[in-house]
Length: 375
Image (cartoon, rainbow, N blue to C red; front, side, top):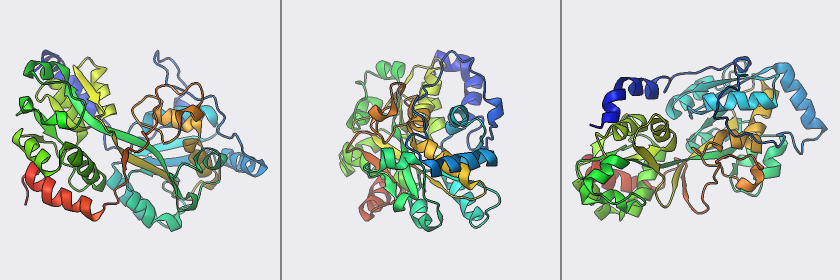
């Protein structure tokens, strides 16, 4: 066990678990502080750019409504969306509630038909849900979707929902532990199969998550298919069914040297605390897609304004400017202040949870029996 972990074990465990999976409500009036020395990137491009008189009427009505409710499966949105949105629309309070993707879609299903309360706008990774519910969604009317998205191929069901970003999944690597084992640097999926890593690997099997099953299908092909997974199984990987946060924590502690799949945000949060851990996106990049749409009608005009903002350069920089998420847009349209924003690599895999028969077969009949030990 690393000296870093033994010195900081309790504080670290607390910091990476508090708030995960919980509902976090943020009022914008409390988000005016700018005292941080590490300011987030902000786009100077007006999110209303290209809007006509009819759009201005929607903005005026949204200001009168004064509130919009946003459900998100991305826990970082609770911190990044409110202050950035407030900068553009100070008269509209955005209430961000965070849920895991499955819990979020279940809550949306329970709220269906209730126009008085609940979410106005949502963002989550289950394209299956978006497809099934497209008919009851309200298409975006703002100028951003036509100005920046019409030729991207990422707008679905006549504007009912849009791919708003990608969360790259890769490997968490304890650089000290990796060197001590004599393993070569991790860059590709096959690098994860080094015999030197035996007993020092953790994996998130992702049972029950269609997007995770797709990740294992794509990653499995890069590892060499069934024979590559047999090599992985020979490393005796530890299973992390509870997700990426415990996996990243154990990599940071040195309990294991490498863990996958991992999210950039979960790893960088630990690296920022001094842990000898790095996020490796792996080549080629595989991302979990995040989709957004207007799902409710309690604040119909404010919902349009928030959805337009999410799809504008201002929203994209707020979501992806720290480099943890990827934007579907060409970074050049985001303006000079795009921070560390990176585009989803062209031709790379973006999971959507819409499983093809060959993907289901590979996960159920090859990955699970070989790596997880199920039949």
